[in-house]
Length: 288
Length: 235
Ligand SMILES: Nc1ncnc2c1ncn2[C@@H]1O[C@H](COP(=O)(O)OP(=O)(O)OP(=O)(O)O)[C@@H](O)[C@H]1O
Ligand SMILES: [Mg+2]
Image 1 (spheres, each protein chain N blue to C red):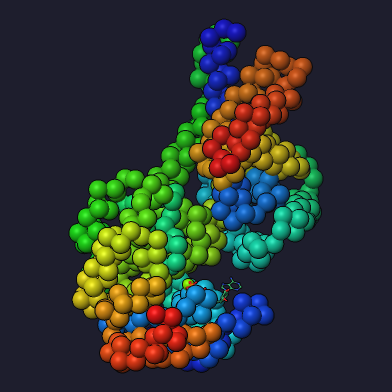
Image 2 (image 1 turned 90 degrees about the vertical axis):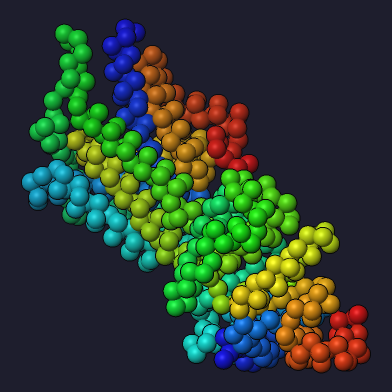
């Protein structure tokens, strides 16, 4: 592989991994903190992509669509937690799987009623639509760099909030001992409701950012859901930093797998997962 | 003025009837010893007052507000801080984070207890600020939970078995701290196996037997009746 191709594939792997992290971080938080297996998490990604499609048409601006889409998905997340997920915390995993699987069907049906089953594309903003020439024949799209940039900024902000602010300390405290945190005057239910909504918004944002490069299609949620679970399992349930590392590993493995072993491309991620779980059964950052 | 007032509390764990009509009051600034042999319901009473195990019947008032059945965070926000049996430090947070996460103004906006003041009261915590909560010794963990409770600027501190499992010298340190806290005007409820140490600091004592109050009176009254101590506490 020549150096320029290697650079391009590395940037692709990075971008794919970071996007996966954005979507999976909410899943691992909700799984780790609240103990809820949320199969509908991939639907938030799908909903985000369709929001980008519909709202771009409505507002005439991609960024207008993203801004409005984030607000809507936070509100949606708050309502969903209040109405349904808050009732799941003390139920067993089977109940959770049943409800959240049902939600996937409902969300897909609603999507079908609202915008139909066609494949759509979303235009990227003009000023990001250029490509940076690398050689006479190869270039790299600015929009993908932009996506990676946004994801890096968000990952760093999450790091600061979780590790450095009192809010983050309270979330971590509530994760380790919910009752004790309540006894110190912290409204854990409310706090976790916002964590849930934040996870929904991140997944939706992932879908919105991906829309201009991957097109918008029915079933895009289930594809990403499976990868998100691979991220959570490799990273260690509940570990945000484990999810970041796992997502990047998957991004690179998948991207280079497609280049180096095109015949087995679909397998590479699962081989990676099996290898890591043999080595560390609780995942990279998991508490065994 | 009654800071905390519970009337006729009946608390159950499933079908087991644990508290059987308990009356319990704490006045502002008062130190109350809560006594009773193992399994008599001391922890259950505390957990009922703090909102963790809502009583099935009876009433809990904080100042003039009825708080029966209120969630624990609401009761904590009324200025009541619990230091539970087994301490409950957050092992995934550093010592500093354990303290800072709890910081809040007290009722009426008081901010008497700051990180600096807590570290002044517990100098050993100051040397361990960057350590993880789980790396502390038992005595240090206890100091951390008490310090963390003080960070909420409470009017009432509830200590359940604060000296349990500690070496006598460390336990003596904890009792010294309990006195210092009492002298700042914070009301305290103390549960401890060491009855002599409790009555040495308490204004009033309540003895529970099988979920009922059998004695409620001053330390002097308790000492004046050794038979009572013998019968209910086995000392
Ligand atoms: N979670 C629970 N479920 C069922 N029964 C319980 C539970 N916790 C305590 N009990 C029972 O309630 C009774 C009172 O227990 P409690 O812990 O309040 O006693 P205590 O006075 O604090 O005892 P100790 O001195 O041992 O701490 C005991 O008989 C105990 O077995
Ligand atoms: Mg007890």
